[in-house]
Amino acid sequence: NLVAKLRQTCSAYPGYGMHKKVIELKKMLCQCLLIKGHGEDCIEYSSIPHGVSKVTIITEWRKACERIYKRAVSKLSFTGVGNGVTSVITDSRCNGHITQLGSFERPVRLPAAIKGAKRAGAGRDPNVLLLTEVEDNYYNMAENVVIPKAHKKTYIKRLKTKIQSIPPDQKGVPLTDDSDGEGGDDTMGSRGSYAAAVVGIGASLKAVDMVVTGKCVNVFCAIRPPGHHAGLELRPMQAVSNGFCLFNAAACAAIYATTPLSQGGLGLRRVCVIDFDVHHGNGTQDILCSTYDPRYLYVSIHAGGAHINGFEDEGSEDESFRHL
Image (cartoon, rainbow, N blue to C red; front, side, top):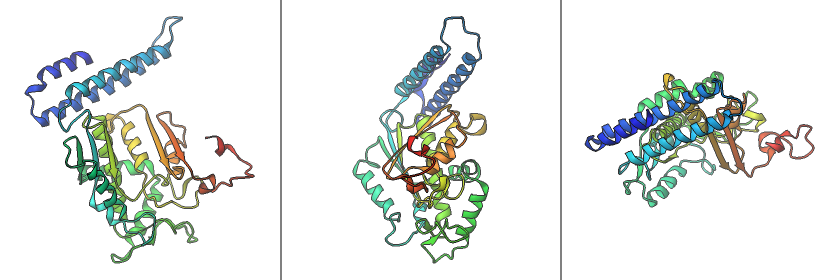
């Protein structure tokens, strides 16, 4: 059925306008992912003849669906959409998050990143798109649906209340200090920090949408504040601070991608998050891996020692952290 659907779409495709082409591409790819998932379930719960490997059948089924998916992207791509297209997403509201002068995480990082993207062709090359606004639907989805799935309500309420109490003309205020005033020295912000963080999550949801539905191959989100140290609650995995982070964009993107289509997500069965940074992304691991959810594989490539997350490098009674 998928092959027949692809042939039918390819036949009618030349007569469509650009908007119709984008819609048909999304429908084709989403149908492919949906059938792939249903097929896996059917095979898993079917009676397989003795001597035949169920694992092999499922693997071959996945490969067949993935070939059709890639073929659809290849056949239905056009200038600015599909194969060979990269997008850069940013939003000026991200710089409403104002830290202290001299902080490693400060507003100058965003224009510097955009400048580099433009030098690489973003906004000039028809296949390197520069998108400078996160639409309201992604902002609202981030704030009302996805962020509450990634972070505990108490953490969200505490952060929002703290930011709302900041005078409009004040900046560099500690946002993640505890009741003793500890742990907030590096994670500072201003009255615009909450909106900036939510916009960043919205950008990540938009990015996932664009990739999964075939609009582009990959997306770079130029957003701030960062997020991979933000976990279910304040300072996850015994971390000494929140490391400049408020909400976790990578974890939110993964949650959105694996949310069923019937619930407004994209229905993916598995997501791999590869995190490369000086420090371990303890927040992302805390959100995605604390319940051993088989939908998520988290890989962290980092240089920072275990002490960053509150572990002693030497002499610890529990050395399991050495063998992640």
